[in-house]
Structures are given as C-alpha cells and as structure tokens.
Length: 208
Image (cartoon, rainbow, N blue to C red; front, side, top):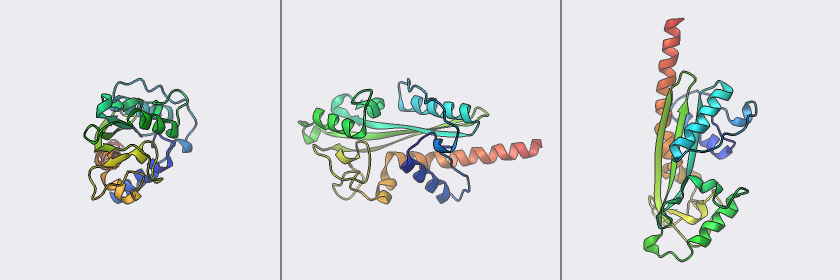
C-alpha cells in the first residue's frame, strides 16, 4: 500500500507497477482503516519516508511504501528541504508555502537560483525488509509562479533536464514523469519491491 492520500502519487505508482508487468494491487490510505499520522521527526528525507512506511506497515499489516520529498534551494542552505510541506507554518498550504518561498528568493540572481527537488521512497514489509531509494531533479527557481499542472513548488521550479524553459507545472504529466525526482525514485524502487515480493512468495510456498 502507498502511505499517502495524494491521488496523483497513487496514479503514478500504479502506472509504474503496470509498466513493470506486475499485477500487484496498490492500495492507498483511503482504502484502509484510519490511523493517526506519525510525527515526521527524521533529519533527512529517507528517515521521514521510513517513519511513514514503518507506521503504515505496523498499522495495516500490509507491505507499505511511503515517500518524503521537498525542494532544496542552494542559496537558502538547501532549505526548505525536509520542511518543505510545512515551510509557512503549522497551518501551511501549498499556496502559502509557494508564496513564502517566492518572497524569500525574489532577488536571487540567475547564477544563485540553483535548486533541486528530492524524493526518498521507503518500502517496509512485515518480515522486517526495508528498501529505500532517493532521486533528484536538478534545476533552478524563478521569481514568479507559472502553470497549473502540478502542486507544491512546481510553478516556480524549472527542471534542467528538458529542451525548454517550462516550469514543472507547465509540463505535461508524461514529460514530467520522465525526469521528475519522484518518477525516478519510483522507477528505481519498484523492481526491488517486486523482487522482494517474489522471493518472499517463493519462500512461503516452499515452507508450505
């Protein structure tokens, strides 16, 4: 299961499993009994992803996959970083976070506007297996929001791995999937998850 309520992430994950030729059924938090979200007390994206995946696996009894992601702006000492989702405070929203970061970086020169999105994926199974993958999407930030095909800081981030100057929120979903931090991390971890599940099923069959 995916330890997230984000429908876009769920669609992307299901699409990746299908592309790998797997018939694994991917559930979301909406498909299981409600439980309190864990405090994300880790000091890195990987630690926070593991906290969420471990909690989901323990609460549901299902193999769980979680991610933690955010934007790092070099001129801000790689912040917001792991605080990206809460950058504007306890009642943070995507819009408020975006506006605050725009306000904080309005005077950055192009040379100092380098940034990246980071995504850590963590898989946890009830047998104690833990798998993690981390990926990045390098680029730079701009001084105004552009586009509506995205969320979070997408409208102010221009990926470097493209032929053009579109923000993440101006790109098509397919084009963004191909180069995004999350897309890379998902594509890296899915084969490892499938390998683990197949090995686990073989071992259980042999024992049975």
